[in-house]
Image (cartoon, rainbow, N blue to C red; front, side, top):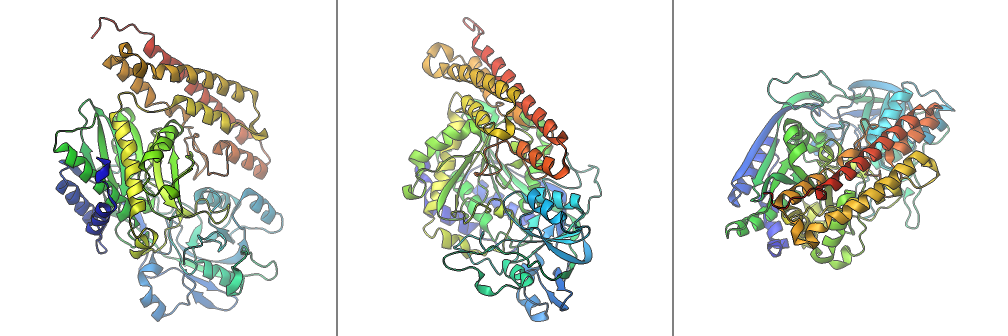
Length: 626
């Protein structure tokens, strides 16, 4: 079946999805027609009316009060010619859901906006109502903005340091879009935007005026010559300590209700039709931001549907139901996936087995970057050994559990569903490159062809995704590893920062219980007597909920509620504990660290109790019972 997933097929599917600029509903309708034409019978269009923050009629502007010069976000001077030439790109160089209006204030360089940066700046100046010159990267944008808002800043100019930009790109003179929305329709937080829902008046999600600017414009503000990036080394940007820079910022985005559409297709399972493996891609209309990178993810999912339906026509069906999703509203804060999941929350809590993400699968061409929940890491690693087309570009790829962008968010952080994603990336240029994918650049359609002209990387992602999907859909016992969860927990407690005896003790008990459970999990494979359908079903019910215990009640903005995922590859500890330690430095109080330790302790203890209860599956005598 996977042999049908060829580069040429994906290329053809992508060409079918190259639409001119259209709105979300029209694009979704065309995807629905494509999926139905492949033979997928149960395909639905699910619409929601949601609050979007869109650009105003003219671009946001930055004015240097010292000289009186006016600039657009990309660093070009305000004039009619520039406006006409780059109108769409200029309009969409903004922060969705930023505060609106004008502000004139001093610009303060806070580098990456870490707690150390804030402590250093607050020791030498009063930051109230001033502008922060902030670099994207190192930690989630929403987390950094929450620190700046608490400190009293009035606005933020956001940019990417030239030393952090991927070497093979020409993005220095381009501004970008970011979303300040943590997820879903802001007017219906925690519940679905169905007809009749109460709409909260949340026009801005922050008090800060936030404006992304290009790297070239940041250099202009700092008054640096163009050759700052040298061949042998790179000098990070820094505002000179001498002389005040006063700037004016004008933001005029508009909040309005718009329809967004999800395309949902079902391939029903024959044995466990009420158990779902969800594969998610996304689409977006209204603007060219992100270019049509979404067409790559939708092309892969469409090619996979085509390969599956060829086999369905010959009588094959998966054991579990496969749900294909193309989400709308992703660039505004994963709105489509949030609304659908909130709409179907009770069903999904019971039925979803795993989420496989196809969010931006080819964003570079250097290395394969597999990310998986701890329980799926072994499956992800095994699949690479026989599904990789270009072996040189995926050998030795380490599978990690780190935060990722895209529509897997709700499934990981609200439902505790095991998730997996394969993508190709460029080699990170610096240790600060984490979270740069939060920026959406105006990438044009030729970009994908430059990254992967033969579409062999697309083929690899398609085969890896197809391989793991079919294994999860068809194996009698779900291929989830309980012991790997316990090992990940113990690894996250290494180091002096979290040397708490109670935590270490409960983590040790979790590992002991997981080892017992893991050996029980193998019994149906090793002993035909243990394969009674009711016993296998009971075992699978335990397996699909292994990670639900690790959702903490609250996490700081931008950080995962699911504590099994680390911030990035540089960190090994639980992110909520690391953040609490930083909070302690900033506020000289250990109350936050005590609360975070309690949350983590209760999560690990809850998991241990759950694993132990799972051992009862094989305590029951089923002989003679139907």
